[in-house]
Image 1 (tube, one colour):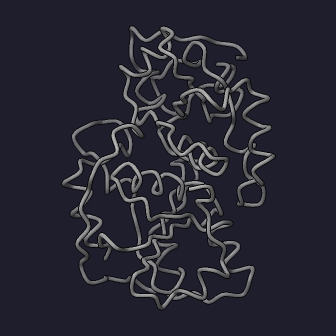
Image 2: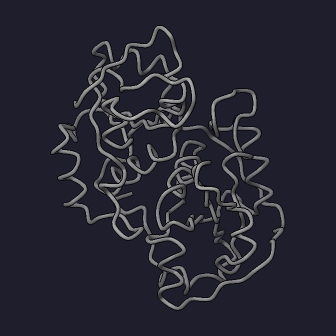
Length: 280
């Protein structure tokens, strides 16, 4: 998939398609003090259902919003009305942030018929398209999970990469968090980054809630020292903005990158995990 994005105009023409499901994947950092569920109820794209990344996740771990088990994911997604033949379009209220995480969830579970709305809800509204209010409960679908294991990395995979295993680590956090100059927002985590990691802050890939054009995306990765031919693992604070890196890389032809689901929430809490500070 060279372009994982769809436009608001494209979506508006297809809202009545029975083989299409639109998902509001809005999520906010805890410090933002915003309620994505309440925002959904107050106004969302007509027909859209809500995906809560803090509910549809692995509840057996204390790590935030980790990928659910295939069985649990399938049950939750069927309840959202998604079937095997459904084309899924995902958006969020910020334009482009948490939608990428849910896009990655679907791909990690083997559902490739999924795209992100370019510019998200802000662009939908700006282009004059309607909203609906309230809460939608769709008919159940027949979704089945078929995990794509190559798209998910764990701490053992990161250790191998750090030790020279051939995969590049690309970190989506802001530069001051990557270098260790700024504290982590989660209490108890050490500062810094995985040794050898490259830093491509997710905010450098987005303007006005929309992903940059492919040539600009390529330049951002290359300038950070990323070899766009070699294997890549993306990471961040808790696996949300790492998915935005994966989305950007897919946009430029790299749809095979893995995402470290535990990200810094896990690595930064491991007492034996090697950590580097300073710029890459």
